[in-house]
Image 1 (cartoon, protein in one colour):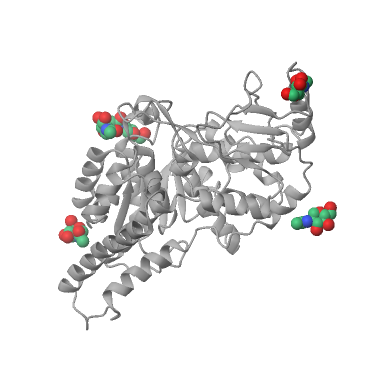
Image 2: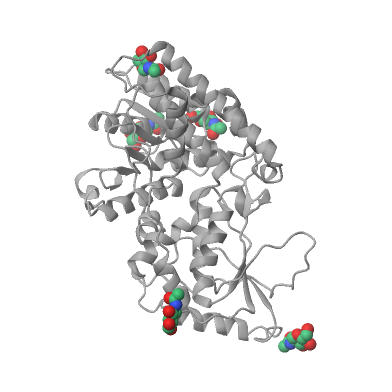
Length: 452
Ligand SMILES: *[C@@H]1O[C@H](CO)[C@@H](O)[C@H](O)[C@H]1NC(C)=O
Ligand SMILES: *[C@@H]1O[C@H](CO)[C@@H](O)[C@H](O)[C@H]1NC(C)=O
Ligand SMILES: *[C@@H]1O[C@H](CO)[C@@H](O)[C@H](O)[C@H]1NC(C)=O
Ligand SMILES: *[C@@H]1O[C@H](CO)[C@@H](O)[C@H](O)[C@H]1NC(C)=O
Ligand SMILES: *[C@@H]1O[C@H](CO)[C@@H](O)[C@H](O)[C@H]1NC(C)=O
């Protein structure tokens, strides 16, 4: 079932859907109770209700919470707005890590310019060749929670107009060429100020013969990735800005069911309201898919299948975690990992989203695109006890950076970069997340440039 189609269904269909999704929950609880009758050491609660409560509580908890947009509201209030200027992002692309980065950078550049925006979509990957990330286009809500975004922008940044053109709407022609915003990485050059960016933008507009400040002007922004020094901004701004982008709730719901079934199957006592539950399960991003191989990532040190899986097993054991949730788009490598972990002494259990979804939910997930399926992993991994992924993956690094915000909120920050001096082939470790491998470009761009 496609997300876009869901929105057009009548309420009776949605009611039927809710009913149908409760049935597998009931079934799973029932099977579980057959093998684990009441009266054991499990707390006895009504099984149907405890399952739905779990999923509801898990879904109402976000890693960075509570969301507090006051710093964003202040920033927008201090901006000089130019409603005639409209920014459009034509070329956000890739998986969630990159699209999220492109979209947030774009939004930030629009806020500083005081521009309106067109609700950004993205380019989509070819299902036949996952290394082709330019195959077609998809709207904002194919990844993100549109209602949440629109609501919060309207409340915290009401000065910005957000357009969502339909096919039949006539749009003004964009100015020729894409505008590449002047970098805001003030950490790499003290000249990269807001003023320098605005001056650069004014000069680019003035250079254009068809530009007139009185008339509506559409500007296609060239995408950027991690091009703002997020740590040069007010702390509350950096902390909350990325939370404007939440995962589409229809997809995210599957992650709640995955975690419930993981808790039932492996008998972990997971608190669904804990952003990062302690001592429950290990989350590994096994990034060995064909596109990563094609890009040569697996030839780097500490990056091939055996290096990744050795490291994940060692770290899970180090943290005394016996269940490893594996996020991967490569089913054959998932089986290899499963075999490897089972022969390990002591044996470890490997599981994944398709193992943990009841058949109808798994079928719904299979209907989604490759990058949408990964959103379920993205959500589950953010909420695992200990996480690990690889340095060249923006997906991995984004999971780690968002989890790192929880430590900052709780005042538990350890220096996540100290590990580079004590261990080989590890770029980041803050105690709840570890990033394997080394890569100069990512290590320079991400720590300050990525929005948590
Ligand atoms: C915006 O700024 C003005 C002063 O410049 C202030 O009076 C007003 O309360 C601010 N509004 C918000 C929502 O912060
Ligand atoms: C602004 O728009 C008006 C009406 O479409 C047009 O007549 C005028 O030439 C435009 N100005 C510039 C500088 O393009
Ligand atoms: C999975 O990995 C294997 C090698 O480990 C590779 O041959 C295959 O193309 C990959 N499949 C996908 C779908 O990425
Ligand atoms: C995998 O990576 C490790 C560590 O970088 C290296 O020692 C090993 O030779 C590699 N294995 C293969 C099959 O390339
Ligand atoms: C976990 O792994 C062990 C060893 O392979 C196996 O005996 C056990 O059945 C697994 N547990 C589950 C719930 O799959």
